[in-house]
Length: 289
Ligand SMILES: C[S@@+](CC[C@H](N)C(=O)[O-])C[C@H]1O[C@@H](n2cnc3c(N)ncnc32)[C@H](O)[C@@H]1O
Image (tube, rainbow, N blue to C red):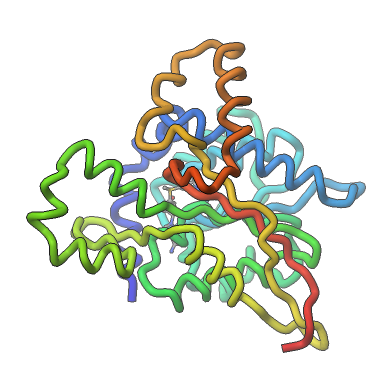
């Protein structure tokens, strides 16, 4: 079982750092937002705004951007401090979020003001899944995301790859793999990163993520539902491990050119060089289970 209070404590203490994370990871933000927008525009046109739940949305970087585009965004996170920052960020950006609620993704089903079955056009889950240690916990949260999504709508979830950590280790402390052989044998097997007592994480790889979505099935009345993975995207494309940092200071035109090149390769998953993996899955009707 994951100590989610440890996770909350970490983000409460690092809310500022977290707010600036997507400025220092400009390419990750640009590619992820682009994929989210593409998914939204592939939905059938509706007269009103799209309903979006941003679960684990932190300081609201995506939520505010999507609200600026006219969508109704509900922001939920386990960190109260990050949500206070999100409130400020929304205010400064001149947008209103539909709801800002502090809750644990594991308990989201019991939070009546935000959890509604078959309601959201899009549920974002870019955070909780890579802080949950057990497969049962990850499946539970993914299942809640699916239930809250309309049939035909999207769940877009982020994961951290094992390669991200291993790349970082190779650059900064390569000997640790040898000195802490026991820990790393287990890490490579389970993906559980429990070495830092102040936070916990789960790192993964493409096949494991595919299997998680493959087992996420449910039933709604007489109808069976499941999540069908449509895209898997490396958010930093081939520039994971900090290699995209050089793009941060580029002007709009320079960044746009790099963005286009990087986006073109972001779904070439043989690469595996991104640090974050973004999975776009559609909720579809299936055989009754
Ligand atoms: C690395 S941040 C990502 C924030 C934002 N979604 C983004 O993509 O930049 C991870 C976020 O997930 C939130 N989080 C982690 N575990 C959670 C849980 N069990 N329930 C709700 N939020 C959680 C954290 O508080 C944090 O805001």
